[in-house]
Amino acid sequence: MKFIVCCVPCATKINSGFIEIMVKKGIYSSKKIKALVVFTLLMAFNIFIIKAETKEIASSAGKTDSIKTEKDEDISAFILHHIADSHEWHFWGKDENKVVLPLPVILWSNGNLITFLSNKHEDESGKIIFNEKGSNLVNYDGKYYYPLKEKNADGAFVKVDENNIPINEKPFDISITKNVVSLFISVFVLLLIFGSVSKSYKTRIGKAPKGLQSVLEPFILFVRDDIAKPQLGIKYERFMPYLLTLFFFVWVNNLLGLIPIFPGGANITGNIAVTMMLALCTFLITTVNANKNYWKHVFNTPGVPWWLKLPLPIMPAVEFIGVLARPIALMIRLFANITAGHILILSLLGLIVILKSVFIAGFSIPFVIFISLIELLVGFLQAFIFTILSALFIGLAVEEEHAH
Amino acid sequence: MTGSIAGIGAGLAAIGAGIGIGLIGGKAMEGMARQPEAANRIQTAMLIAAAFVDAVALFAVVVAFLGK
Image (cartoon, rainbow over all chains, first blue to last red; front, side):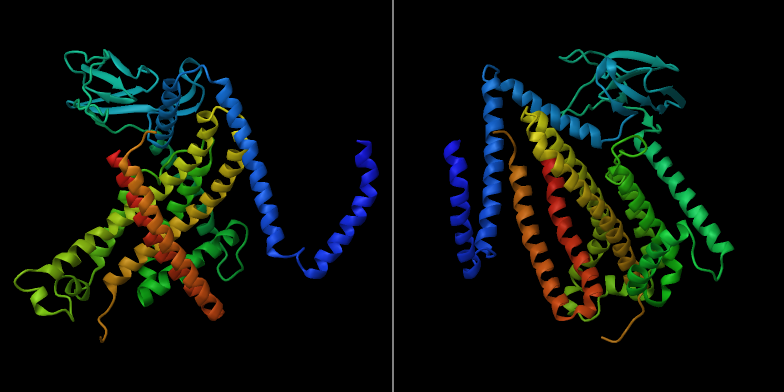
């Protein structure tokens, strides 16, 4: 200690001389030094993580591997359960201590409408048969099925295929599930916002926008000037209501999905049924508004040699598949992007549990925040892309013939 | 080590999409540097192209999930 203290003055002298030389040579500000600093920080971080891991391995040396794999499966099941639809809105806790919002289950079974709250029949093992309005039902993994006559090896009245999905017959399920409730919430939010905005547009004709109106006007103009006009040309006004609805619906639902607590958190735009409905709307609008020119391009593409069309309709077949593939690509793009984002955030949080170390939190929490910020961007970007591609497809359908 | 070949396939698709998005982004940057006044239009076109490439990787992820 003493040695260090007496060495500090001379060390600083030497150091300052050294730094002067470095500054003169221009090394101090060079890329090498920067790279060195980054590398050192990375190494320090790595050592920290390795230390944490070895500690963890040392502490769990007595445990067997099977526990770890079970935990891993738990995490992926947890993640898949989180992004899936459900008959209850789960807040926190597990088993007896869980806090949930039970949602109504509505089933159409043999001409009867069966309704009950989801917490009435909570056991998800499939071992308990209950009777509602003369129909025997069984709850397996949160879904309702007709029970089989005999039990399977686990004691449940269901038969599962190789992917663990029951092959039992089930009643027609029109329940108000988590996604449906979330859809109601987002519709409510959208109506609230745009009701007031449209009212202020009506009352303030010719005046500068005010309040909520001035917040949303740039986005509305963005949809008009950057999406509708370049893709649709002079006919853009007819499709503006649809494009605006699409843009704000997808965007609001993406953002609601990113909120981890109650009013948000459901994975609506990451539900393939929702994106399929949106893509189907675009497909119907495209097909209904398509003009003669569009169908000519599909079935009798100009500028293509005749032998690609006549004996074997290769070109028309390819074009027709293209027409069908566009809405399918739209559907999967939004679904996969949003689902992948949710899975990414949850798996980064799950790392803490999988590696069984609190120190991992120091790495994964900032990373989760970073990914969440990226997801904010992705939420906007996907809404934009869905809208602009819809506009593009509609634009292709309404385009007038021009000279080639 | 557990997993499936589908996971490797998704990873390979991610490599392809990464190269694709890198090229799109790089070329768009070049274009914007050359013609800053066209930056807005280039950006829109870049995002659309990136979305198409992006979708291919995500198709692979979906297929990997189905094939799991």
